[in-house]
Image 1 (tube, one colour):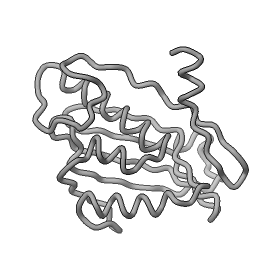
Image 2: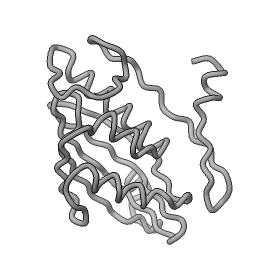
Image 3: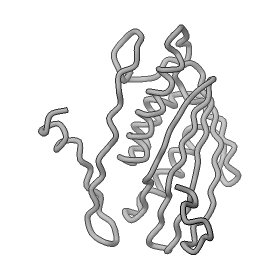
Length: 173
C-alpha cells in the first residue's frame, strides 16, 4: 500500500474525547473468480476456494462495519437477502437490523475496536470491544454468522460487560 493510499484510508472519528484515528486492516484478495470484493456477494458460490473467500468476505465486512461503521454498505454487499437474527432484542430481517444499527451508531462516541475475525466450515466469528462512552459502558462482544455461499444469512451475538476491575489481567482481549 502506498503512503498516499494509506492516508486516504485513514478514518477520522469524532468522539467525546476528540478525534480518533482508525487504521483499517487491509483485506487480501482471495483466490477464485471475479473482482474482489464483489459488489454483492454470491449466495451460490462454491468450489475449492470457498473457505478462503468466506474468510476474506468476513474480513471485508469487518473493515466496513467495525472500522468504518458503514451499516448500509456492509449489508448491501454481504447481506443482500435473507437475514435470520437470533439477537434477543432484535426483530427478524435485514431491514430491521439496518434500522436498529443505523440508529445505534448515530452516537459518534460509540466505537467497535480490537476486532478479530475468522471463518471456517461455513461460519464466521468476530470478537470485538464495544464502547459506549456516553453511558460509561464497555463490552466484550461477539458476532457469529452463517454463510450461504459468500453471503451472511444468519446471525448470533453476545456481550459481556467490562468493568475494569476483573481479576484476570488479560480478560477479554
